[in-house]
Length: 384
Image (tube, rainbow, N blue to C red):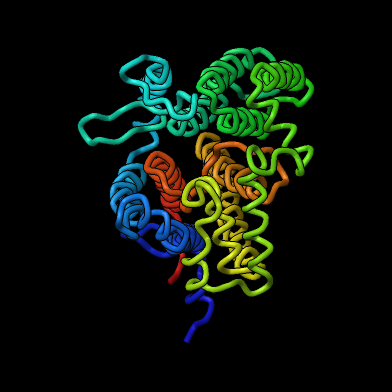
């Protein structure tokens, strides 16, 4: 038995290759996400809807749709994606603006992040789509128009303007965390693409100033910031969610409380099936489970960044970097919030949190990454 063949990083698919490591990490994240979502949501689903499987059934349905989306993004040629970019950007912009239109917008808790989908009786969060659109746009721009540092100096204004425009619109939806995620991903992508740090810093400082003004323009956001700085502030209000999440994490100990105990008491954390699902994972699985999650995430990141290094053209390389970075940063942001290391925001944990928009866009990102790994192997000849 050839051990090297068993643990090969790639698997043949119709004479070409996909990255087995990347595929396995995606399947692991998806499977673990379904498992812990059931553990975290069953109690609340039983009380709210009379069905402990309510959220997991919805997530399974969206997973099937997500697999279709992943398949489409996997087989779509890069040439078609690049030709369609103007439409992708336009649709993303229009959908984001529809969040402010009464009757179409579906506001929750003062935030205008969603639009109604009457035909399916659900909502969609356009800012999720922006994450993909920005990565594809910047990757295409720096591949098509920027060939050296001099081009970078002259060509920074259009991509920076587009990045700031979408970040500002998403921030105006009261989705501060996603706006930061989009801006951070775009900034890092431009730097990796060859833009000099000195030319990016002024834009970064302006954006940082705008974000500070945005935070201090709302009493609600200021109180959240105070709650982060002072954990004893309003423990039954602004700090309640973080406090209960920390308690759940500490109760997990080293080995965790197990699935059964989690079903009985894990419901004490508000919104645990969405933004705070990681606290449920930590309580049920303990430190070892948390470590296991981060190892899987690190493995996913390693395979994603390996795709970047192996890509045959700049567009594929920058796309692989941007999509991988977006998923990894979002995951770390969510975990940081749940652990109390970052101020409270409304950002989901990819593959784990209940929510159709997040899952569909994450599946699309993963489909594009698998697309890149498949096309990287064209004309390569390896023995199997």
